[in-house]
Length: 524
Image (tube, rainbow, N blue to C red):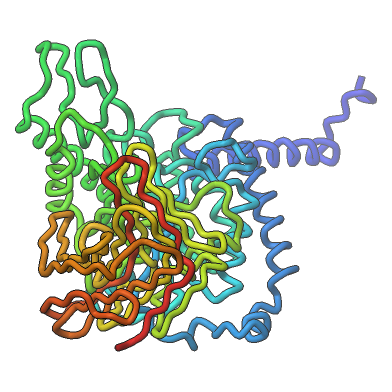
């Protein structure tokens, strides 16, 4: 029997060592799983670990294969290194949701597009900043290089961290993840980052977090039939009392969620939470119908009591960048579409950079004409066309926000309605304008959509036609409207900065239509 069961130390020691090693490996695996993944299901954690390792290897190899001579590439392209760039005059903020391994047909960005986007920005001199740097810059406390941007992700999803972090690591980028507290506290979730995962994310030193509500990022019932509404904009249904909540109850509920979210995040992660990302891109009521029209304004007012900055996604009526001159509680973010490659994102950002004068545009490429409303298209001409349900179409030129005194001239094919040249435009609803109609012109001051006529003149010279030249000149104290070379109206105004835009209008829905073949702007 001893021949078959040799229990001498020489024979037993390797077995004992192997068993001990196996126990240590199992213990270490479960300990690391608890530290890095928390309550995330075990096999899902294993998949995340494997994906992260594979993506990290792929990104590292690709980056060093294509970007090991990045400094030389910048020089060859004529792009100054970040430390050699001029001071920024405005800052863009990008926002994403999930980064998926394949295109899932939603707003989520496929991994290969995200890598291409970040590599393209890095290669062209763009660098990320932190929340603190952003806020200090907006308060004019520090300067930043021109090609600086803030990178943000909403929802606190696992796919907003694991596919992203390897890219941040190799590019030396950083980002902010906006957390839904109730989502992160969901046990055994394969979707949301758990508290352990968020701690692990913060430990990398590449990530910050902000609030995306406590539990407002889901539909809520607004009547007895369970019609769905939004937490921050609608009066909700109280089934136990068989009624809809009052406005004062709405305010109290909203305030409690905002405060509870901040307190929970600060207590769990021991970091100040000073920024808030409004769910669904921005609960500001723009383009949405709610049963409480005042709800969005109440939410904004309550959020401003708790946070320093509240993010909305860039609305079409605004410039894409954030300007220190306009710094307020609400900040704009550019939502990156799922089908953008690196060059498209680069074009969007560079179109938003503050533009210098003189400026000319023959419409052969898109120079940053933003769609405020209606149909706005570039293709040899800039075409403005009202949709069937609208009376006008309007566009602003991105990057023109800081212009002051200008001589703004357009060549227009115009056969119906009115043409508006916008100047000193703070947004598509706040501007000064020369409004040309067949046989007349008005000088307008428009503030938040409310119109004041500063001057009006009839003139038979003003008429429809092809290659019609319309002109607006703004100086420190006056606005002058010209048809061709003839001055047709003038009004006195106080000086201010603001960009340019063009608008067409017709009383008949869907009829407004014009094409612009050339724009030129210079200092008068």
